[in-house]
Length: 80
Image 1 (cartoon, rainbow, N blue to C red):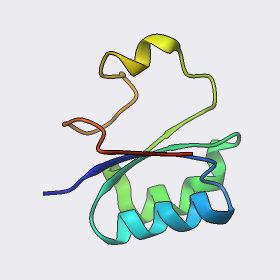
Image 2: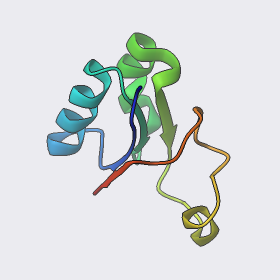
Image 3: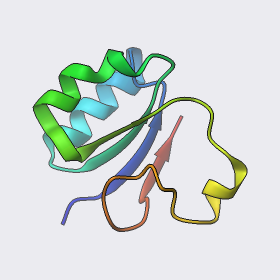
Image 4: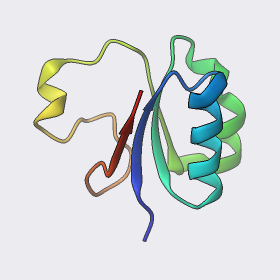
């Protein structure tokens, strides 16, 4: 069963590498980026396994299932 990840800083560096590794395993990733188009290639390759969001997240998202998570289940891993 795929695991769900929330990874920040996914446009480059370790965030990008971790995002690619999780997706290659078949997991789901909510990826935060300043410029969502930086993940267009991953969105094209992995489709619904990638959820992109900007950096403007609200406090209430921590306690309730956010609307911007495009897959079911809870977040298993949170990396920033």
